Image (cartoon, rainbow, N blue to C red; front, top):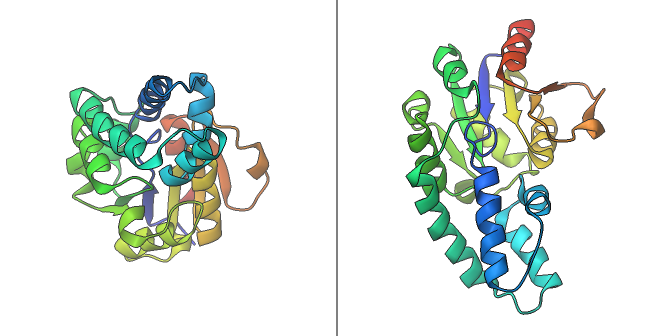
Length: 214
C-alpha cells in the first residue's frame, strides 16, 4: 500500500524546541536544588508524556512539587518559544513542497504546538491539522494518538508515514500500523530490521524515503 499522507511529530522533528525545553527544565530544576546534566534531561524528557517525566522526578526528589513545577515550565516555555524558535534543518522546504495531506500529532498541548509552529514559520502549511494528546487523552507510545491523526487525514494507518524523533513516537506509529521514519540522532537501534521502520537522519533522507515508498 502506497503512502498517501504524512503525520509529523512537532518537537525535535518539525521545530528545534526540545533542546531549548531541556535547558529550561534544567534551570527550573536547579532553582529547586535538583541538578541534572542537560543531556540527561533531554534523554528522559524526549517523547515522554510530561506528567510521567515529572512524576518520575518527584519519586526521586521528594521535595519537588509537581503541579507548580509543571505550571511554571508551561508558562515560561511558551514565552521562550514565542521569542524565537527555528524549524529543524530542511523542515520548512520539505513541508512546503510536500503534495500529500499532512498533519501534526503531538504529546504537547495545543497552545504549545501552535506557538512553536507559528514562530518557526510552519503554521500555515498545516492549516490547523493538529492532533494533541491532551485532546484525545492518549499519549505516545499509545497508538491511539496516531490513529486519531490518520482519521484527520481520512486515511488508513497503513497509508500514512509517521515522522518522529522519539522512541515512544516510533513505538506508537508501529503499534498503530503506520510506516515509521525515525528522524534524527536518537538511538533507534532497537527498531532496526523491524518491518515498516526506517531511520532518516535528516530531511534529505526523508525525501528519498518518501520517494521510494511511492
